[in-house]
Length: 282
Image 1 (cartoon, rainbow, N blue to C red):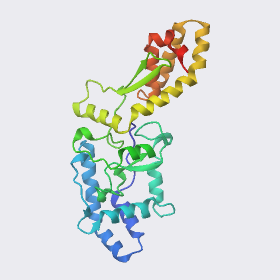
Image 2 (tube, one colour):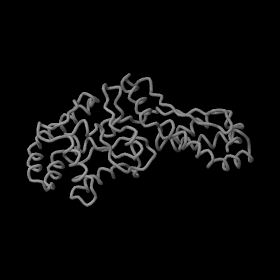
Image 3 (tube, helix red, strand yellow):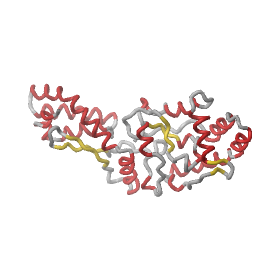
């Protein structure tokens, strides 16, 4: 999971801009009348987000007894997301905050949408709140869907509030099979709190990262087979080991929890792979 800077937009400002674009005069008036509630919802979100307690925010179906959830969903779709709308630039700018356009939730696929961390169907007051909108790939957005955490442990990590630092938590294991297999797991450091450890495991399972990384690693093995064979022909298993250590060091320096960094660390540490496993890649 990648940490991102918070969006440079205030919820009330975005909401009022979206509301002002509605053609229905009566609806526009009702929308603008709940602007203070939108601001208050953002404030509560900020406080709970910093405390890692977003699960305590209560669900609702109507905002301030005036605007329904469906109307807020429509506001998001028609006045915020729709291409050509006056406020689409805000949507696009939030999306572009992800470095290199890569999804911060899985660290692999390309950002294509914004994910509501707390579902807009259950938290309509947060439908256009920038703090609740996270750049995401289509798969991560679909996998999480409208999941509502019921406790702190069930929360996936939030790119605007959670920073995992440089602690190594992604582990790969090499299977001595033909062809060699690579499996991934989330192994949080011992010094993490029990809640943080469980949040990591939940994030890993929710976004099905073991399957994603395993598939990518299998393809990577095929890509590096020729290079490993060439190195092996020049010397022996020690040369293969040294090469893999260098690859692991380079990728770990860039991101210790990328699937490539974990893969190369595991390959370098596997005496079996360095001795003969690489010969079985297919």
